[in-house]
Image (cartoon, rainbow, N blue to C red; front, side, top):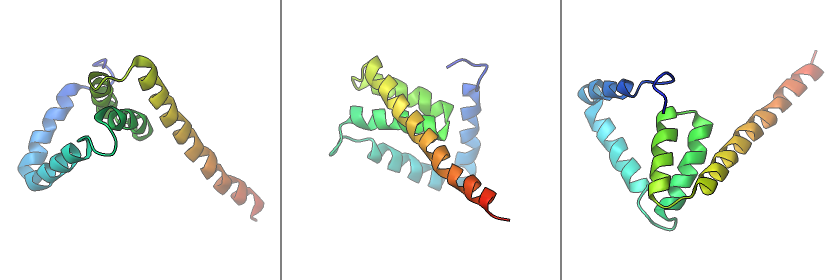
Length: 109
């Protein structure tokens, strides 16, 4: 990830978060680790889902990390690109669905 978009050093601030609410940060880390363990879905499939979701949530750290983990889990470049496009489609779909609010507002006086 290019350093001019987001600094990886910014993640060092999580140390302060751990000082303030380490119990919750630890609970999140445990939950996150458990979620990505193989189960009904393989690790590769979960990482591909995460890649698509990360593009919806716009988290640069998740995009970087889950793309790397998907590749490590055996995902191909084509699979990763398709996962990204699924996220793009869902994000656009959400925007399109919300356009009904604007169209309804135009009908009201």
